[in-house]
Image 1 (spheres, rainbow, N blue to C red):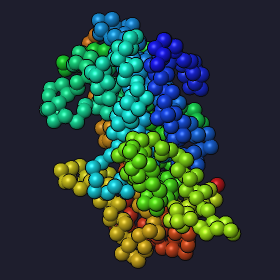
Image 2: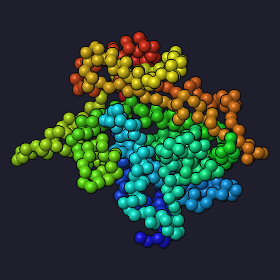
Image 3: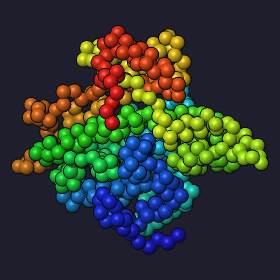
Image 4: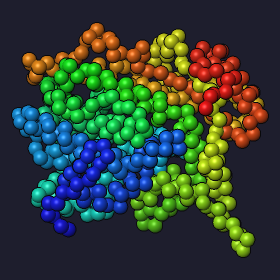
Amino acid sequence: MDLKIHPQVFNDPIHGHVELHPLLVKITDTPQFQRLRNIKQLGGGYFVYPGACHKRFEHSIGVAHLAGELAKALQSRQPGLNITDRDILCVQIAGLCHDLGHGPFSHLFDGMFIPEACKGQKKWKHEDASIEMFDHVVKSNKLREVMRKKPYSLDENDEIFIKEMINGPQKDPEAAQAEWPYKGRTRDKSFLYEIVSNKRNGIDVDKFDYFARDCHHLGIQNNFDHWRFIKFARVCDVEGEKRICSRDKEVGNLYNMFHTRNYLHRRAYQHRVTKSVEIMIKDAFMKANNHIKIQGSNGKMFKLSEAKNDMEAYSKLTDHLFEYILYSESKKESQEESEESKNLKGARDILKRIISRDLYKFVGEALLTEKKEVKKEEEKGKKEDEKQKQQASLTQAFVDAGIPRDDFEVVVVTFDYGMKDKDPLADTYFYRKEDPDKAYPINQTQVRSFLPARFFENIIRVYWKNTDKTKLNTATRLFREWCEKNGFEELRNLNKKMKK
């Protein structure tokens, strides 16, 4: 394999001309990475926003670019941190590979389909698959021998470091008990773990890219300036660890970032029609789950929900699954319908409704009241999740009224600022111009004008699936009665038709 240094330049609509390190180019030129060209960044959002057709491929390149830019800025600004070129290369690879594990329609697959198809099993996230897919990319494309040789010289520790940046410390009982759980880099380089996926406060280059990219394609204003953050970023000591800090005057810019996140969830990611489409795609996948077989390693066949357990099989899953099901009908005048076509009829009918815009009807939504939120805090120690209790209660109310379970769906969507009910900047540190090496937290009295009334909201929604709309009014009435009985504030007047 050619080991010459040949960086590649991409003309990106968000970041301009982006130059990728040659090792990153070798990773992008693999079938497993090219697969990301066929996975939409915003899943069902494309059925609502016509511009939201961008893919995980370009997002991953953007994150790799920004990860390198932030690491290089810190290296240049603070030579005493001893950031090596190898550190920077690892950070860039982690940024490039952090989304390798996404399935069809991105978060729809791991956030909606897998939890329903694999109930009772261990919780699975796309980050888990990203780690496995990274190993698969390295092994199946013989990249390990390339990585070990000069000029790259990456060793086993560097591979561990890359995977830790994507999905946190490896699942090692000893490491979990250790004071410093990471193995890839020592504690003096703890700040490097905050660049790609920041588990402390959510300020990382993954968000920097998808805020800018999603806003661009959605046609929504992005008020956060990530280049300004990179310009003012410094590493300071915070309670024995080195953390990435920002200039004190940048607190407003950072709140803009979290406001943008919340706004995108409300306007796009959790849009009521987007959710309707995604529930329909999820339902189609559920009906197709046992009838589509994907060949994996050693010729073994996997059903749809099992493909995630074998990277060779999983690498064949992209958004094309939608069209595969949609056009699976094989009946002609001269031949009988195939067995697969018969089995996929239920799934196919749902997808036909999507392309005919006969979507699941939105029944209504309600906000958890302040009184209920206080109660939730008092019951914090209870094992049963509050959202699941809300869903189960409303679902049972519909079933008790004689409405079949398959005729409706209850979902709970959460709007927050990235840290559930907490202020995301509560664990963010800043420095002053006159003392750039000393970190301190922001006092909330200094930022009162930036703070929302609350950082967390649960919204419960009902969608009507049945093509027969005669019971829709009954569902609307039941939803209202349940809201009143349980102290929920209804967010829409369901008796009035929405103006187009």
